[in-house]
Length: 462
Image (cartoon, rainbow, N blue to C red; front, top):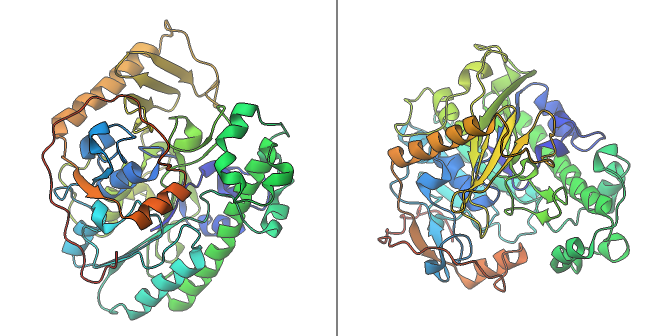
């Protein structure tokens, strides 16, 4: 599984971006099954990966706060960690006889935050937010070469090449700068410009052109182009190793990125599609049954039960996602795979916001105030025009959301642990935009009992 942090689906050629932004991944997709409408359960990394690993909705695993800023002021300078009671994809595969390894750059995804459960190796020695995919791929390849030939394995690779600041080489920018998908030139407002101020000193190009929204989008796309080049080399290496003929390979993301579509930039701040729509591309060994698109709405929580099924292992009790392996094997025509509503929450500083998305409608609701915004995605795919309170679809969307909330409560909530953040990790998080100067709104305090920190794999450095 290759997870590209902050990768929007619509900035890939396979998902409609015009121009040569992702030629290697596009060729890979032609021998894969592409899920056109996959959505994350949260607009930032930690809660999203918790859902990906466990197939649980955020209100069930409850991993969403950081230093008291994103929902629970009582945390202080601690962060939520995934409960040891959670069953992860790596744990299921390990119990099924798989060797398991993770190669991770993102500072949120660490053993001490509970994400190492089930991994024999959890490599965070590749440190630094600026570490590019080449180094991570090299470490993963070394582990793959040393893997026992008679033991199946699962490798998780978490990359930061697309995450801000957008500092890809100028040749990558030149490759996509004329794409009509970047939109029209427009000078950022003073408010918009203030939101990117902390990144200006990190990107030399911004001194001359940093006030044009098209340039920011172009340099984000340049990050994608640069990553795609590194990915192409990795695919070539896997072919030489014979892995492309033997392995199922998944390419996805944890969330997208707002590029001023709704007056803001970055991620974690809204539940609009630009922050939730992620790629999901699955290639079976040798490209078997590839070359198809599935248009039904699916979610990241579906990945875990799907891979468990592909491994021939029993379904996981309590998983909230669904098994998508039938369309991978061509067993279900794309028009026969039923769309299921996708749900999201965990907005930074606004944990009371929840979203329910169907094929046609998106409901974003504040569970504390009862206020809600409804969008018709068929007529308004950009989510710019709220429907009126008497819209015929509103009662049904409210019922869909309430049914999911009730299902979460019936499933039973896990109690997240509490983990300290080392100064090194705190500094890396500040560099990614999780600044200590930020303040959180008043949030209700909840009494929660402590959970032990999950045991660390012996081979996993911290």
